[in-house]
Image 1 (cartoon, protein in one colour):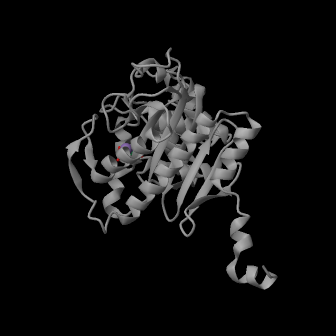
Image 2 (cartoon, protein in one colour):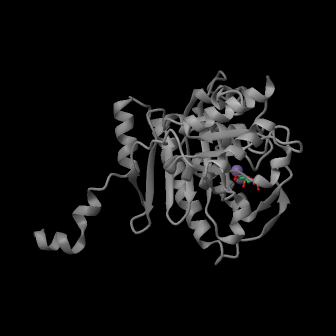
Length: 343
Ligand code: AHG
Ligand code: MN
Ligand code: MN
């Protein structure tokens, strides 16, 4: 092909972009990963593309509105929650192995595929995060976490809760998708955090944010301040300090969106416990722990107010947990104020 032809088609530019598939292949080579793990990552990426398409078409396809049921936490379920849950369970069933899954939308563990060899991995999902923002066309996301299966055996009876009741630092990988102005896929396999952006013209995720690092300090705090009266005095003091210090407040109300901003710009996201929610609102296994893994991989930190979120061992699959996450120094200051109030 002549140089002119290349200029006209932009073929070289597109063909030399580093894609998610390139990244997964490279990681498999460098860290001698098994093909099974790569296959799970490819399945999740496919699920994200499908959900992204569903999110884009939601208005057109009249997918907005209530699905007419409640999830296991008794919250309203929108149609996109159900759709996303089904998409991820189907695509993970394609990976050829028998994978145990946990989803926010289902009370019990379930299998993504009947029969076959048990996968070495188990997956916990928040298939659609920020669902209260669906109706108003504001960015939403998906969150996922992968653990190595610890229960014995390669055959039958594949569902064992012990596979999920592991501390977050044992996650093999974790990530999220953000369905925003662009669709992004951000994840870590324990070697830093990488962000990919979906190029809809070719249907590929392109590496746009290599080695993401959360600044050690920031000037944005993010919380639902309507709940302030029920918070621990230390958390109240922290927010007062933030206001006095001339910082900014930002709260989308989609955890993935608020976390993504925090990861890029620095700052702190807070979802404390309060008098009405003694364990907080967010779920440890498929909201707090995966984002804590990413925060730490990016040089930030996540705490429940006293301990590192990654050291918490879930007692049940839908357990809730207070969350303070973001810039290292800000999370440390918040923990200090909580500790001071308890002296
Ligand atoms: P989900 O849509 O998966 O149920 O999660 C909703 C969560 C999270 O995305 C968000 O940060 C938080 O709920 C908002 O809660 P408030 O409305 O109480 O602020
Ligand atoms: Mn959620
Ligand atoms: Mn959800």
